[in-house]
Picture 1 (cartoon, one colour):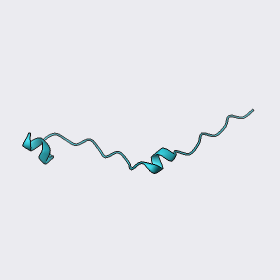
Picture 2 (cartoon, rainbow, N blue to C red; picture 1 turned 90 degrees about the vertical axis):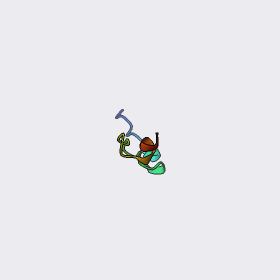
Picture 3 (cartoon, helix red, strand yellow; picture 1 turned 120 degrees about the vertical axis):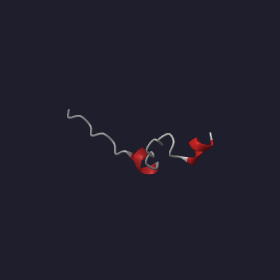
Length: 33
């Protein structure tokens, strides 16, 4: 029997894309620390 196709990525559609990692020294939070 042929392999079943993988289900569509519903999790990626429901959840927003992961933001890129923040670089140290560019965010105000790191400056305050």
